[in-house]
Image (cartoon, rainbow, N blue to C red):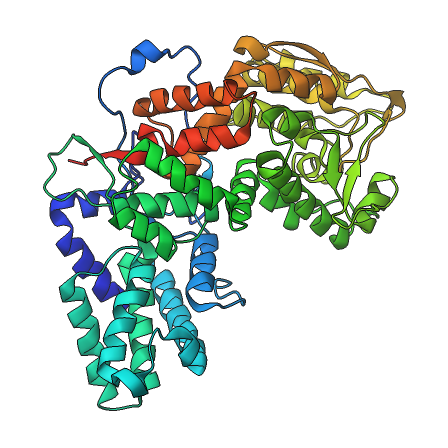
Length: 562
């Protein structure tokens, strides 16, 4: 069973639905990338936020953009096979890196490579070989009691529905049964079931999140079918496929309304598996992955060990969980909560007492830390190996919290900062950026924000010195709606961002991009507005924002590709 053959068959079957166009290009308003023009870690950024949209602009029928055909990310693949086969080992180590589209992992542009085909084949063979060693745990029936053929069919129907995330068609069941029978004539029952498993785990219906609109007119906006919406819900909250209960609900039509989606979203969000969705969103949104591989000057920061690095990474994800799912969840908590979760090495690194609670929760009472912007991991990934970077920190706020993408430097411009003279403040050191006509357009949007972070060095230590001079942590957000203004220190900045309608709408936009796997499209504006309104009317409860996203048109509908 070879994946390349199955991919060809899938596209032939989907020709009327625009499979070829969707595989080759991104959905929404993003232009397709030519084959070979981007690597596996290609990034496409989204547009600016949409403060100013009103309810009156959103009257009428549903508004939604085209949806790309997405291959599972490495994380989604791993979580999905873990749920299907109860495995704990990682089989994705050799997989190619995921694309980033709209800032998030979404394999929807670059065509699948021969290397990926081989990796999926190898993974399927390995997974199947491991699964048949504990076959009784996997089977829904006893082949000795009901007969091998009957049990094989039941397995195909039940396991196949979980793997394809929908009910299998009769022809698909028959094809897999034929595969089973052919192998059973030459080997034992376990070997035949193993081959069926290989076929299921190499199928495009498993590897891709397939959304069809059979018979719909091109350009029309149609609701996702029940199983397709169940799949979106499950990957949004769990980063894994839907369980039987959600597929049953989809089959019963319980996801056909926004209220029905909210009802089942409540169960998914309450489940511990929802930790994965929150962690994945924040990890991707804020680029915390970089923390695990970046280099730092070991002579300047000898206490930044691999142990501390790992602790910082986990701290960021645990803080996100508490802000999105904890008892005091809110955007204000995320941006300004005076607590975190640390272990003994990280507590020592921060210069605080080791946690006494089993959870590792600590309270910050000295005003030096509070909220996501002062977590060591985020401060570390927005710095250079030896120096903190006001530029990178300002860029993070501008693009990730205000949704204002910045243009890359003009061709030929030297982006290397000048050598820093002794006894020179950071502001003076970087003043050349804002006085150079080739640089000032972007740097006046980034640098003054980054100066607000001057109390934190390149690995997140708190300091009162900027070299040999006292820290000046005053800065400014310019030309940016209700977040604009002067701030002294990150605590003031965090409070200002939490109050900002632009930041609230930007967070909704980031979640829409994460949910649909493409850059923001014009048709998303009303969905973003409505989700932002739910956030604001709930005292900034982030659960309300998540539920606003899954009830939105952008999440529940799609525009049919030409």
